[in-house]
Structures are given as structure tokens and as C-alpha cells.
Image 1 (cartoon, rainbow, N blue to C red):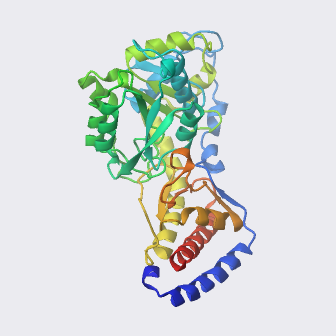
Image 2 (image 1 turned 90 degrees about the vertical axis):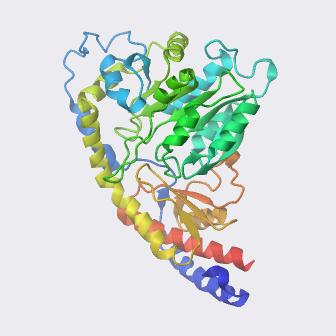
Image 3 (image 1 turned 135 degrees about the vertical axis):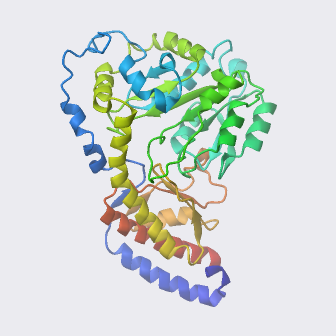
Length: 422
């Protein structure tokens, strides 16, 4: 174990590891593992959708998708997405290709116009704050930062966010208006929230009447095993406590069909949904209903979607195995890091020794392997321990991923030896 070596032994080890790293660096690799993007092979799975004959472009109730109308989406697509959202059809709003846009708009509307029966967030100059489970999704954090919303870090546990901390902070401060959550196969940790965590969210007592839970269920069908994890329906639980207005649920097909041409949706209470319809009617005449019809005809129902996702799994699972095999072979025996082995999702969250993440990312970049920036998984891009790195295995071909993980493991070893010998 590196931690048990003397200074002299560490110095000799560092020299050996430097030579091994330089040999890898000399290969001139150009590999990108910076984002959780689907591979071209995954995108090809949906090519047939573009060849579907939509006939007269009319839905099963006769609505012409080429025309104005159906602001909140066509019924066929709502029924198809209902099981992913866990709400009734009338409480589904279909958006464009990005669920992030729906999240951004929900925050913007709350800031400008308020939520049902509540004033705009931050009225009269009062600060607006959000709780941010971390490690978490960097785009959530940059969105909040762009709005000038103060972010408060909440640690992630094996069961989800630290609910003792969530409950305490939300109950004490009326300026805390919400929390961002990725509840299933979380980004980047791959954790699915426990039933207890979901129930505690649903029963949450908050100082702010207009507190909102942004439930970004992006990976709810992205399973990697024959025993997929299950997530309790938060909306049903919220209804039991009269808190149905407290939650917005988001899904999209951006990693299911086409990253630049999927559909997204938000599900919430009847009151939240009706206000969103009124407000969005001022912004748009609706999103791409022809694309909505195309998706509904391609998948038909949840069974069709699940069959499609098995094809994704066949492509993605071996790539995750490449990552796990490399970490278990190179890092586990020398105890230089830890990671959660997710049953689904798009990422592996790696925690190295304190003070090594930035150096590992730098070493990988110099050797031609681009990773997500160190610190990106925390608010303001600041990992207090400088140890978390998000590994995104889906985009590179397996052969390139093998090379990338060889570089990654070499960088972890070298950075760890440098820190321990300092």
C-alpha cells in the first residue's frame, strides 16, 4: 500500500510511475470522456424512427400535428411518458429535446412570476437559495449560478442526500426555495434513492411555502443489470401529505433516441401544470408535435421502450465493465480510491486520495484523455477535498476506453504518489 511506504520508497515508486506515465503519454492519444454522451452505435438504434410513415400526421383523436394547438403536447406521447413521470395524463407537459430547458424555464417562471399562490422568488431583494446534493450534476449547478441562486452543498449518502441535513435546513430558512435531485442512478454517483429518502422528501416540512423539489429522473430506464433498481413514486407519496405542489418531475429521451432530437416532459400537480400552461402560452405555441408523434409511434408503449433500452444496455454494459475491471485490477489492490458500482445510469463516480483529483485530470489531459473537470460535481466547481472525478464511459469505443482507463489508472497512481511523498 502506498500509504505504508517510506519517503525513500515513495520517491523510487514515483520515478517508476513517471516513466510508465510518459510511455503512455508518448502514444499520442486523443480520447474524450468529458460528457455522458451516447455513442454513435446507440444513436443508430433509433434511426428507424426517422423512416416511419406518419400518414396524415393526425393523432388518435384527430389532431393534426402539423398545425397549431396542443400546447402541452399530444395525448399519445403523454400516455407513453406517463409511467416515467408517475403522474396522470392531464399533469404531463411535453417539451422540446431538452429537460434542462424545462428546468431552466421552471426556475425563470418562479423568479419572474412566482408559483401558485406565492410571490416571485427573491422579491424585494431577498436571497434565493437551493440545496445541492453533491457530488451532483454540474449543469444543475451552473444553471443555479447563472440565476444568482446561492447553492448549499448537501452530502450524498448511499441512500441519497443526507436527509437529516435537508430537513433541518429547509425547515429553518424561508429563502431556501428548492433542491435539485437525480433520484435514480444519480449523476455521477449512480445511487438510487431509498424508499425512506423518497418518503422523507414527500413529507418535507419547509419554511418556504413555495419550496420546490426538482426531480430530474433522467436515467429511470437506463438499466445495466437483470435486476434493475426501483424508485418509489414521489408524486404519490407527496399526495399523501398534501405536498403535491412541491415536486416537479422531469424526464427526456435525449439518451434514448437522439441527443439533439428527443423529447422531454415535466410532470407535476394539476395546479402547477395549469399555471405552467398559462405562462408558457405567452412564450410558445408549443413544441415539435411531429417529433412527439414520431416517438409515440416508434415505441408505442412502455414495453416497446423497455425492449429498446435492452439494446442500449447491450452496448453500454460492456463499457462499464471495462471501467470496473481496470479499477479493480489497478486501483483496488493499492487502495488509492473508491467507487460505487451502479446498476444503471451513465457515470462512475471515483473518489481518489484527498488533493489528487485536479492533478489526475491534468495528467490525463496531457496524455490525450479528456475528463470532466475536477470539482465540476460540486457547487461553484469547488470540491472541498479535491478527490471526486466523474468517469463517463458511454461515448468512446471499447478499444479506446481500454486505453483511456490505462491512462486514468496510471494518472491516479502517479498523483497519489506525488501527494503522499510531498
